[in-house]
Length: 445
Image (cartoon, rainbow, N blue to C red):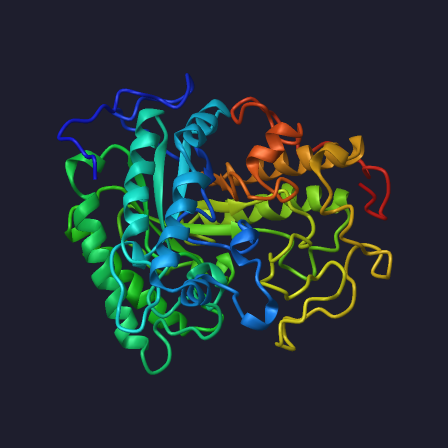
């Protein structure tokens, strides 16, 4: 795999961070400022829509159905081309140049192993994961390993590999998939406990977004304790990260205590919440300042929450209009076309701020070059308000660095359009200021 017995950890991401060879120090005092490489090693239809551009009758909605349709040989060549071109060394150069210091790399269990009946392309993404880590090292970026897909799917969403039923800790194969997940972490943790990775792997993630609103929370907590003990026993010294499971941060108070270096991972978005997506632009900035700041502070204290907390996903997106964002062909909340098939989650009437036929995705999906001055001002303030809030915890990772379509949300687009700070460490947002209305409540762009 091109790995040599020597490596160089002398680089730092920028002049504001220490070299990889030196300990970062307290993340509570010096929070991580990072970005995700979403859609690279774990496919997501909204990030790379061209890979899912098929007749809807074929039902190609996730990585499972895609590789099944393509067949082993074509799937392997198609994904290898994607892995080799979607992210390159230049990606890591650009991330460091943006003033960021950490990178979160999502990948899935088939990077290491597959099981009977799995159609996934096995082990090919593993080579690219290692390649990405070496590029991160070369440019001084610390890495957060993120397991996005576990056997059986931990959430039933397309980014876990297979959309639909949750078969992890759940159903007839739940116990089998729980053990397979531990077996995977046994392999993974032994590998990354090697001296080569001690300095660069800052965070080791156990399971991305387990859907604890559908799973038995006690089962997830018990599995997390086993996985933590396993990876620590195998020599992982990095912080170990577990997902909040959408239970509400206050509900983690008193749970999983006494496990040294265990960190709660939270993902904050307004666009997937029917009550928040319809906020005006001013209300969204205000909510980032007040609501998310309060949540961060409460979660960081063991008297009101879990304790050490980081924010590994967030975005400037204020609509859910992007193609395939809510699963392939499922519509969106913004215009009231989100037909999820679940009466508890579907949204069949418009919930943009005007809540009527004026709700449109045309301008929301337009190119960044067409954004109005007011809209750019909102996006910049929304980003800075979130950064300020999440730095009340252990820091943040923007979702995501790049998408295939330049009109969809990415950190790279934000830099190019002037709606993200040119340098992540050069910003100062005052949440006590009066938030402007950015033009109108009609959400013109």
